[in-house]
Image (cartoon, rainbow, N blue to C red; front, top):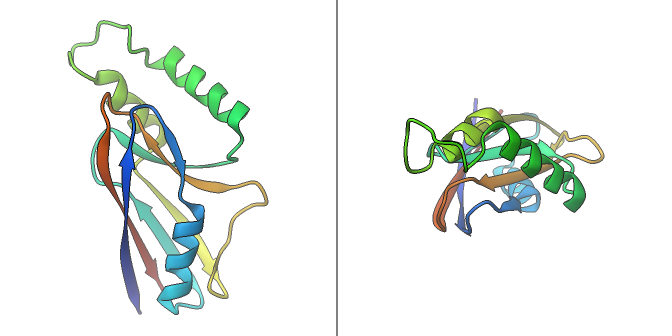
Amino acid sequence: MAVYTEIIKLKTKSQKIYNITNKVEEIVRSSDIEDGLCLVFVPGSTGAILLNEDDPMLLEDLKDVLEHIASKETLWHHPENAHSHIRASLIGSEKLIPVHAKKLVLGQWQDIMFCEFDTRSRERQVIVSVIG
């Protein structure tokens, strides 16, 4: 079994969502792995990986839902950025995507996005491992 890993580096702004589909696709092509799995993972507890349609109105709806569920205005036990941790926990820090013929197997409207939920700008790493 072969494993190929690359890191995507991102400079992020608080509460923003970044489409990383093209970068992940490039890594899959570079891996020379025909069939297998692609793991997309973000280290840290306030960032997340989302698989969904990259539609601005849909992403605003998602932000509204997350604000409703984990509002930054709520007085949480964790005083600084509990809402950031909760939002990231709900979306998840990783996604596993099938690879076939050196291509990601995604639905027509599925994109891979990094969500920055922290309260400040960050320098992030997204680890992409292709296994096959």
